Length: 226
Image (cartoon, rainbow, N blue to C red; front, side):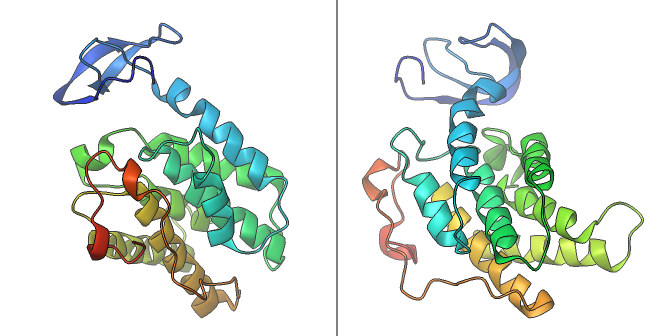
């Protein structure tokens, strides 16, 4: 984001100073020139684009919404910004469908919850893609799930486990855009099976338009979206 050099992924955290706002924080990703961008600066522009699309669309198709977000020229090929795409696309589609009476504040809350766990590089460091807790946060809001609840928490964990298992089959190397698509498929089918909410599923195969941008190499024919 600063000089265009390839990023270095560190084996252990070091204190890094944000090249944009001068904040010092513990981080794992920088460039050879010691440039670093903190999480808030890293995500700010993309989240603004995501929210603009969310609050201006009347679509009930989460895939259409997500593809529009991911096709913004400034949007990165990889990164935890994709967790906000998944959260925004499913939440705004649900709100537009109307069965759940979602407010703007609840949609904003889904972004706040996503921000707490979608952290750059952590998919490689912890094995947990930030899109997974983003989907979990959305369902927790929909169901009012929290510590101490019964069926609500079980259902939230169930959809999260389904998303994890689906993502596993698309790993090697990772692709955030593929993870968004499969997670939305899981979430959409889960809504239909459990709540009779019939959001559109893709009627035709999704053909990714970002193949040449993948810095680690696209999986090509191994990916259902190739």
